[in-house]
Image (cartoon, rainbow, N blue to C red):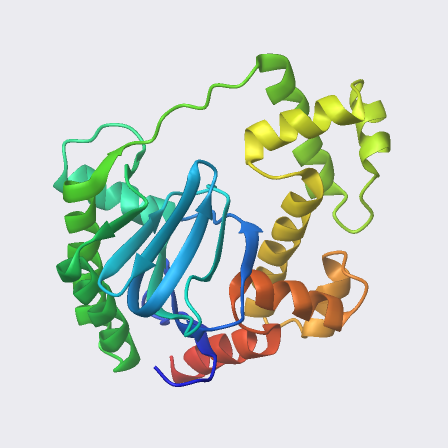
Length: 278
């Protein structure tokens, strides 16, 4: 696989509901984070170790990793040579539409398994990338839908409803709203708990139960999501950093690369190149 890390995170201008990432990582490790859409990754070499709320999955070549929306997870190399993969990030409404058309699932469709060995599905995911890279949006869109339909039919199910203590769930939801609204100047945990009429440890437990991570980790994720939107709109990285609450561009760059897998400048250039070609 070679001895260097590389990554490309981009979007085809005719496939707005899909992000694509092809990468080879050795030392890079993704911290705990979550996506608002689905993650479908085909491992093409090496070994990936995925940390999930209920355990760890080690996935090698020919394996497919499937992560549902808002599921907190980590990722790192599971072997000295690292791992290479082709990953699709389809929007939640795209997967819902495919599920409604091709399955009998009625409700919020998702994947019942996180890691499976399915070489045909892995081949389809890689083929989506090849078609998109060749500029063939018709083929990429067709292959994407075939891949998702296959994975839903073979490994799909309805996402379970969350069971959380109502009082704690309400505090967690209110805390999330406060952090979203005051992203550039968030309160401390003690200030936030006092504002919501609870205690710091009770709020910390409730937030972890609801979102799978503590408030400060969730806030970093939220800042990166908003920074992505700003970068896609053409805002310079230094301005985007301040707009979402980071102290400076290097601070944004550090967290952005850890969570997204590429630096903010490279992410923005890839989007700009797609727009220029369109």
